[in-house]
Length: 97
Figure 1 (cartoon, rainbow, N blue to C red):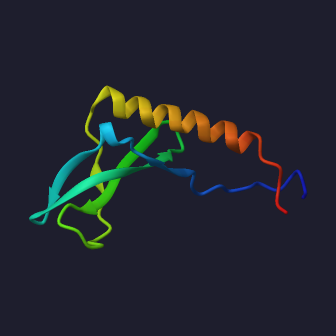
Figure 2 (cartoon, rainbow, N blue to C red; figure 1 turned 90 degrees about the vertical axis):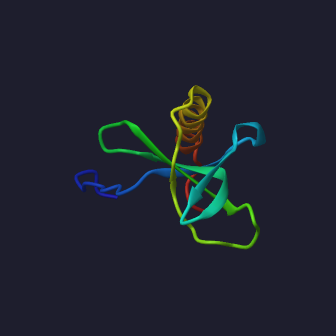
């Protein structure tokens, strides 16, 4: 690859399983969801942004709807540590094939 070529990375995002003891429920359009996954994104300025996803508590697939992540220290710590871990995994990659 030509070292003069600029590489445009448009997104850096990871999915993180929320440990059972940190999960919570939230309601959207009258349906209750149990949140079990964080999607953590690295913003262009270096900050992190996160959204939570889950399944309806009544069962079924339900809609893929994002929820805000509550401002709880343990959830912030989970996102921070997951980003550090993902960075270490990316740094240690062994290339394609």
